[in-house]
Amino acid sequence: MGLRAIVILSLVSCLMGQEATPEPAKEVSELPQWKAEDWEMLKTGELIPGSTIFGGIALERLLSGDQEPIELDPVVREIPEKKPVVEEWPLKISEEFLSRYFHHAPEAFLVDPQDLLTEQEKQEREKFLNDHADDSGFDLYVYLFDAKQEIPVGESLQGVVLDHFADKESTAVVFYFMGDPKRSELAFSEDLSEEISRGNMRDLMKLSIEEAMESDESLAQLEFFSDQLARRLSGLEKKLKEDGVLGARLRGMGEKEEEKLGSLASLWHDFRENSEAFLAVVVLVSLALSVGLLVFLRYLLDRNRAFVFPDAQGSPLLGAPHAPGVGSVISYHNRTQPPSIQRNNYPDYLQRM
Image 1 (cartoon, rainbow, N blue to C red):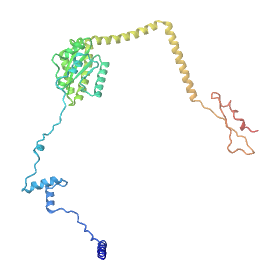
Image 2 (tube, one colour):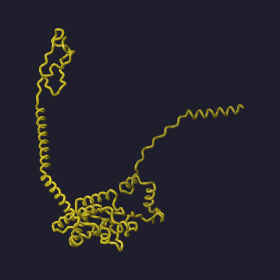
Image 3 (cartoon, one colour):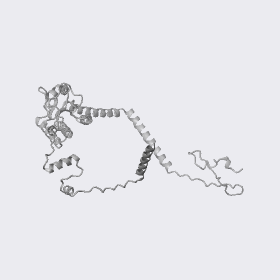
Image 4 (cartoon, rainbow, N blue to C red):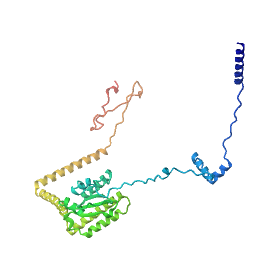
């Protein structure tokens, strides 16, 4: 028992001695410094700050000369470089679009079943063609194809015109290839095919294609081409009218204008022949002008009219000439009567008893 107590006391004293003994303060290490050889490598460009650990190891092994350089695994090294895939339209027109191109009459002036244009671009071109049809004697239909697409064997622009535009007058039809305006084709409806020479058609297409080639962007080319062709068709229409060579539609437009002018002249002539009606209208117009003139003169007189108000004399109150906060009030209830007639129209409570 005494030995056990002695051992315990010695252990406690040792522990207390360790806790009481303070640990020596750790010295703060200095900031890292460049080594002389690293600094020289940094200045020569052999050492790149911020490179990865593995990059530093590879550079060290490469410069040591006594170790083989690190090489990539053959599987990784031989991975082929991927080239960007450029989406191209097929050279052959799909069967689902053939009927809309060649077997059915178009529902609009712009025919684009393959959606080569976006919806916004399509609406803008359709509006342009609609406006041209309203302002001109020609209808212009534009069929859109991709630059490298080929027209199927057995189909042609002339066939489309004969099949779907035989009953139309003064119509121009274009096969336009997006991105390659030089491949464009032009044909006219049957009523104009003999009146417009091949030379005129070549000139129309040449000028329109040259205008389109001013741009390298396919949409801008289409806009330049259609704008130029529309202007040239308007000039052609004017020339045909001067030469007296007009399609039935153009002749019909002229005849309608003449009929409208003739009907107006006839109506005026009949009106003048009816003396009673003519006299009644003249009297009514004269009365209306007279009334209007009188109203205008009355307005001028009223605007320059001046009103003179009388000086109001206040009555004394309790021997004083003025009373605090009390004054005479004159009310004019009738705007049409002069103020002199209404001078006594003031409230009774302001009168002196």
